Image (tube, rainbow, N blue to C red):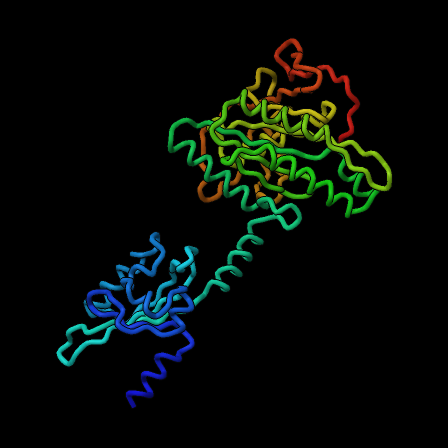
Amino acid sequence: MRSVLEGAFSDAPIGMALVDMSGRMSHVNEALCRITGYTNAQIRLHAFRDLSDPQDADIDEPEKRDLFEGRIPSYHVEKRYQHASGHSVWVLLSVSLVRDRVGRPLHLIAQVQDISARKEREARLEHLVDHDFLTMLYNGRRFEQALVQEIKFADRYGDGGGAMLLLDVDHFKAVNDRFGHKIGDDLLKTVAATLRGRMRDTDVLGRLGGDEFGMILPRVDGAKAENVAEGIVKALRRLTVMPAEHHVPVTASVGVALFDGLTNMEIMAAADLAMYQAKALGRDRFAVYQPSVVAGQEVASRLGGAEVSRTRMGNAVCATKRLRPQTIPGARRPPPRALRAVRAHQPQAGRVGSPGGGPQVAADTSPGTGG
């Protein structure tokens, strides 16, 4: 019977080890050696705890304590082991305790299963849930979650700084209708790559749907946000698509909204309003949502319309004179604030403000291509 048990231990398809009360491994099988990359002689030079990735070494300490104190008969935990070659291996560790006749602990029986393939599949699925399949950027749902997180971070550390950019490719529908969805998809991927190349490591970029992209700029002031928006407009203006020997210029309209104490929904609606104002003023430019010094009823109506149009946010219809977004978990509820107007720029021609405090519009010296 002893030889049968020893054979079952040695030939088990999952890793197994007998661990004494000092934490040393008295017996290990071949499967555990394969999982960890050590030979039988090498692995027994290590304490059992040392097989774990340093970041996960103590992750099962509470369960181990309950096991020794008799509150549980065994436990299971997913953790990372460190392979002999240096990389991490995800394992499912199952541990039980053998006691003598009077209840004193004798040794631990550890079973180790390699679950790396399952973890990779889960990571791929999680990536698909959070990312747009075409561009591999964040999708709208994940982008909005990131915006809530950035607003909380800005509040927590007291600076309140940050901005969101909302970008819409001008005349994208016309390109799609004339040249087909394949060319349209290629255009969106090219725009995504251009935007990705202008990001900082701390920025967040997403495709919110169709030809609409969003960018979160943490810890920036208005001047920096405008510089980024201007750079994006210029960079996209240099792009072209050439389907069937046709030369199709690319431009975009960009809306800029500062955090400025707004909720996540208000920021998105404000950026939406600014973006549509950039389109109304000729496209191929950016517009900034800012405190209004003009009559607010028209601005309020446009702001309400912009929010209603964002059906992906699940907003309630707003009142005609004040934005009243439906709150979600994590979103703040600020007191009523002054309505905001839009300042628009055509970067190529400079920034020439119109008198009277209304929307500032630069002279448009280049033909617009947008939609």
